[in-house]
Length: 294
Image (cartoon, rainbow, N blue to C red; front, side, top):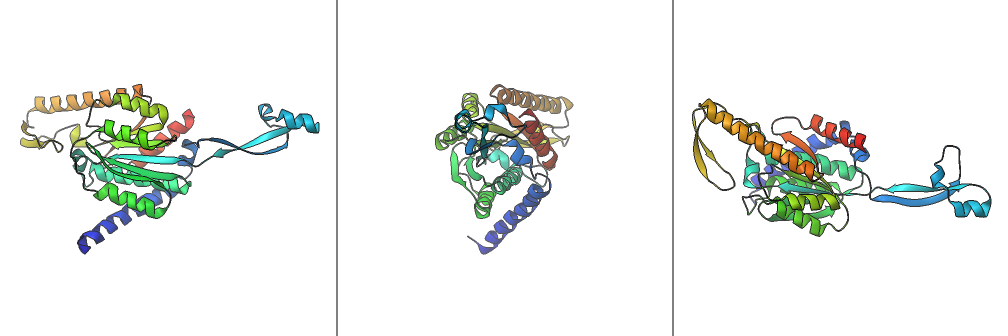
């Protein structure tokens, strides 16, 4: 690889790391830990009962032998596996601001990954288009996270389309134990609802919808050639016509409502983010909402 390109890749990865690690330390400290629970409880010891202890935790066998009440003490089995399923299809290269949807996905993935390793959890990554592009098995450590950020940003996909069904099917097959899965996509796909429900039953699945404002509303800029980045199909749109812009917005809203319904029906928590806008406040609100519900 050209040394100049290599330096640019390293510079961008480092930039993402600096931005997101500061966010993890300053804004999200404690939020992640309180939201995502471990796989269960491990027995630690038996100790003598103290006023205020839960009566249901009394160990009756030890109590009978000693003649004094003893309780069982448990600790949470904290270690989790976080799996990032990141859509790298052609449509995610789009961005009407200085940030593409794929760059937004990389920043969010970085925040989640650094939060995970800060809590001694493992992080894995699945990159997908209309096929599985890359699988990075769950591991710990800063170098592992930096490699994941690099691949999310710069992996060159073989496919241009989107298959959420393929991504979920692969994730279910490779993850034998329950994991926290973040499905990060613009969801420009259909026919994946059955796999969505199945994945949500087996794992803690969270849908992250990355969007761009120009996908919801067209500007009045006259005659535009609009191209589908996944199929290459082009069409001319007269954006000065109010009815054309209105119909475009209506179709976008219908798709958004349908997606929200599909996620809700599958029991999947969701988060909506937009390029060029801060994801910090929406992410904190999402964490707090989940923490309150738990």
